[in-house]
Length: 235
Ligand SMILES: C[S@@+](CC[C@H](N)C(=O)[O-])C[C@H]1O[C@@H](n2cnc3c(N)ncnc32)[C@H](O)[C@@H]1O
Image (cartoon, rainbow, N blue to C red; front, side, top):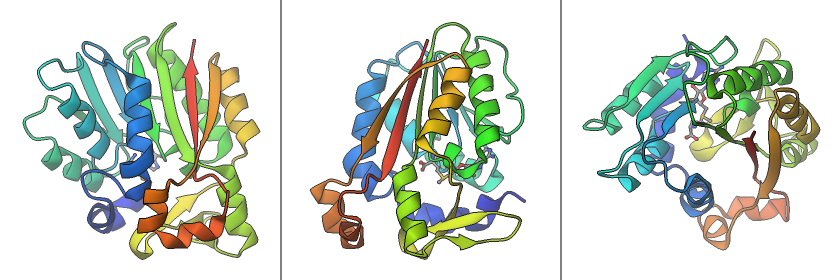
């Protein structure tokens, strides 16, 4: 059973159909702006969770949808939640572990999204996954991957907020008392994984906005620590 099968319902209750407060107030708009017009493109989302972002993207493209939309996740429970939230939309759901070779042809996609999934797998497997993303995007295409910012993970570690969960897995606190798996991959390691796979990459640190801090005042204690790192990778 995938780890998220056990917490899928709790995750869905905590984050809903628009994501938690950081996504609602910051990340969703950043991603949608970077994606621009996805009409007619072939989109793959890795670690899609409850499918909330795919739904946002498809609703925005109502009447002019992407040519193909594939949602992949290791957790069957998460995929079932995604299926329910996306009824009426043409999407393919694939249960698969991104640590294994992707079950798609070379050059099958134009855009790959991966939000808060690469920070859950060890860095050498991030490197393999990036090489696979490159293969399934062929020469063109773009990867937009967001990870928990390594500075935030370092800060949580320093304050004793990371906890072992067996088999070498660490967990970090998340919304509504949930603990999510996290690895201590550095910014340099993410960059190297993408560049070794043949991508040119731009890294952007994303911070909590005032609206996020109003909803989650505990984040204010982090002072200026960024919450997420956006990896925008292309040819
Ligand atoms: C923190 S959640 C993020 C979900 C969604 N992207 C979002 O931002 O709401 C991480 C997701 O990645 C999936 N995941 C974790 N490790 C995975 C792996 N090795 N292969 C595929 N999916 C994985 C989990 O099942 C979960 O749905």
